[in-house]
Length: 230
Image 1 (cartoon, one colour):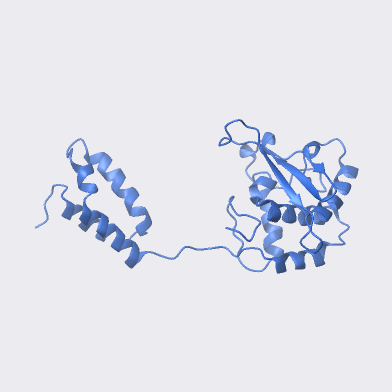
Image 2: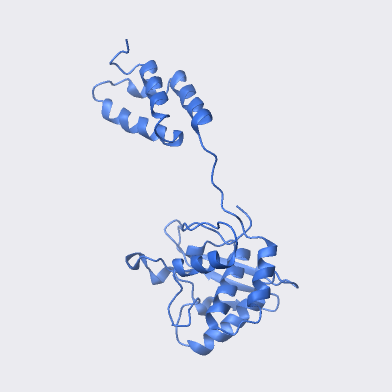
């Protein structure tokens, strides 16, 4: 019979039971919550949780019942060539915006969420939007300023340097064409990325256009990066 006390055996049996119904990667969280509730009645439950047999059962559950990580398809130089072929001579402002933002995000290792505003209105914070007056144009590079965030100790932000390329991978030429269009349409708007209608592009707008143009699953979470590097 199984003891009602929290022995290493009972916890390991529980791990084996859970692995049939939930993802093994979440079992450790279940155990932590259970141990927290049981501690007033079984003070040694934390020590039991750290026992070797429980750890080995957890590892075995991950190996037997775990699933492979789902990875999104990265953008490649071939994708950028296709992008340049399609939008290199674009005349519509939104097309220039899309082209320039993807190229800047790819070379600047930026997330889509860093180039756009959240879909949810209550989550929008204009202080986190990139600003036009902080763009520095030089002969062979363009510098963008990424505003600070809560993990930035001094809230100074980061400088994103985009180097010029002599081929279809060049991010500077598309950005210059976009800036010419943007400055003509909205000379007094402080935000860098602006759509034809004068609003900062939303996360959903950008991802929808990316999924419509690029083949494969590029992801849709706020952390999706516009780069071939993970």
